[in-house]
Length: 356
Image (cartoon, rainbow, N blue to C red; front, side):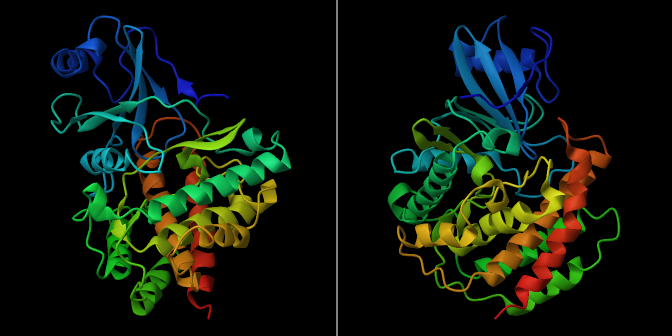
């Protein structure tokens, strides 16, 4: 299995977003096995929001997560929430990296951060990775992805100490308001149709009969570490938007990635979603939902509103990344194309929100 791509700096240099000298001094007290002059860090390429680094020292390897550089949207990059949820899920059937250390002091590296174990596996985010797989392997990955999501949604929040992790009542209406606010903080150009989509979602938000489950908030294939020999999900990553809410929101966003972007020319070669879906030889979104429904007690019901919410949410996320890119606040390649995805997402969302 190949590992996530690493952007390697010069030996012992501090990559952008980290001050290794200050970090080493902090670790000398809290994780002394990682402190010392041989501490090195490399940015793990591929993430489009929070920044992820591989730390190496004294034969140890761990992963560090911190918020993006500049223009941090409120609550969207909360290290404490990520650390708390993966700590809580450790004894469940949901595979997560072991949580090792949380630092809420922004003075150490310029922002709060946490450390977690390094899990071996591959992040499948591009056709160049999945095209060589057999049809059986692609199907196995897709079904393992759905089995893992079903496992997450069947966890009792109170049983793992997450009873107060969110406010399930009014979750869907609150999601529309939250992402509307994020949109207003990321506007830098005309976005035809996006205000109409927001207004239609706000006017038609369902009650959310399934509310009160743990939701990931950005569940998709490339937020998983997986293997294909054997096919397995080794870890679910990127918990920055996790909360208690309606699990159909996870399904709607997943279908947005899978069936909307997976069948869109705008996604081809794009770092957010490189067309991973039926067009890439994976099962259809309907097959994914059938698999999920067979392993979960969640009433999947009509998902069109949740797909529309997924389109709106992803459009806002892409616009936020585009905003940061225009200000030189993104690390890695491919960010120049992310803004192109906003228009097709808005168009599909407008169609979906009207479905009966």
